[in-house]
Length: 497
Image (cartoon, rainbow, N blue to C red; front, side, top):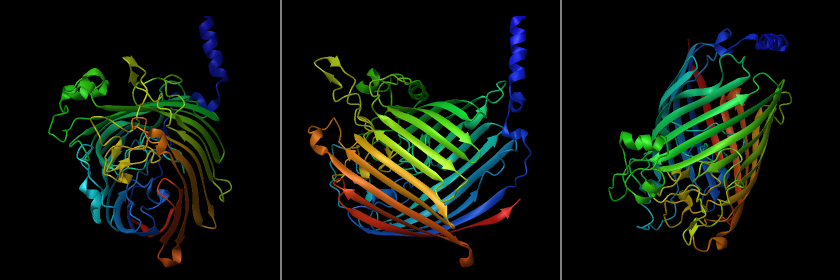
């Protein structure tokens, strides 16, 4: 009897907006329409230095060449998702890009460290930037095709997530899950979940050939329509399967997939039989979001898991992670986004993995692996944060990540001044190489990367969008270098229906 009275009392004090026991967007009126659009763009970069500046090419899904001089042409047909309140929605895109760039350095290929891909030397390349289809059936999302893989642990104008960022090219994949925060039935929207499962094929063949990618994630968020939300997400990914450069089968059957899914031992090598089959990595994020009318502010912490998967607040590599705060507002447009981050990957559970028969479980060697020597990279670019130096910068052609221990401070701001949309990025990073390299302390270097971007749509010029991006690097990591990118883009509607 007392429990019944308590339950009635709780219902009485519950705010009126919470009486919907399962609030979903599909319960609201659908006044949208479906659209097919086109996109066309031209771009050119020019600068001095060995490479194109860091923020000129990083965080662009691998579409901008690392050469100091390059140009591209792009065309796309896009069907965006435009009906969030309908019980089903769908979207897709086909985007093609052709790029020409100046010669890159003549890399020395070292046979024992990997097979350096020939595509790094090609001065003319074409790529399928996107070619995918996605459908949402009520709350379930299904997608297939060549598409970017991101973990949604991002912030606007940030350095990118430690697990999956927007730095590497799109990957052929299939996925299923709940991609947006969705209310748990019966809890009036105060508890939401999201998650998914993805299988992808890694086609770069930088070291192993025909390897695959397994990825799953789950998140929970409390708060709903309250002004403060708290969320926690756990992500697990693994490179697995394929064939070594000598032709050894690394495990491509259902049993291998089961071992990878549950991170169990298996395969043919001693390392995988002792630990787990595949190259397993993970990440978790805790975020607190405060929101009001026309604004929101999020504080977040993310870490990277290489060896032992430990839950929140545990593990040896707690000094490593990404701490950030981002604020967005739509009341005063001149500065509508601010992001500040601190990133550290220098601890890695200490410098020693084992010594004298004692396992210290240190030397985590982020983004590196003894079997998959292309590491946590795709087409020579980091799948995670570009702050960990990608193999495209390796002067001797190694496919491994040679610099994974970094400390960085980052600032980003953006806004709209009289139709001129701008963003400013400033990143200072100190690099410490890898523990696994002999004289790792002597590998220290630093870089300060600056980028200013401005875009303006000119309706009198056929609605063209003109953009300019200026970037520079100052420091010992790559030397002093600078560059500029000019872009002209056009977007339009082919059909509404």
